Length: 98
Image (tube, rainbow, N blue to C red; front, side, top):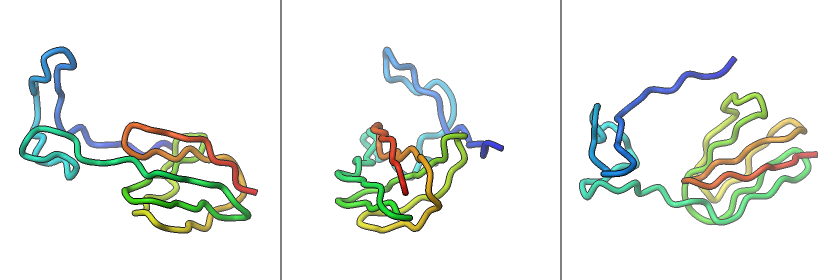
C-alpha cells in the first residue's frame, strides 16, 4: 500500500498566501517563508546499493509509491535490485539497481 502523508498547510500558488494550516510544522520551512531543502547533487544506482553524494535529504520510493528510505547525503543505501525513484527537493530521478 501507499503510505499516507500529513497535510501541513495549503498555499495559493498565485499569491503565495497561506490559506490553511501551519507552515511552522514543516521542518523545511523557515521564518522568511521559503522552503529550505536543497536537492542532493548526485545519485547513482549500483550493485545492490544507491549511492548519494553531495548534501541534503533524499527520499527513495519504489515504483508503486512506497517509501523505501530517507537518508541525508552523503550516504550509501543497500536496497534490493529494481527500479526506484529518488526525490530531493523538487527534483526526482529514476534509479536502476542491479
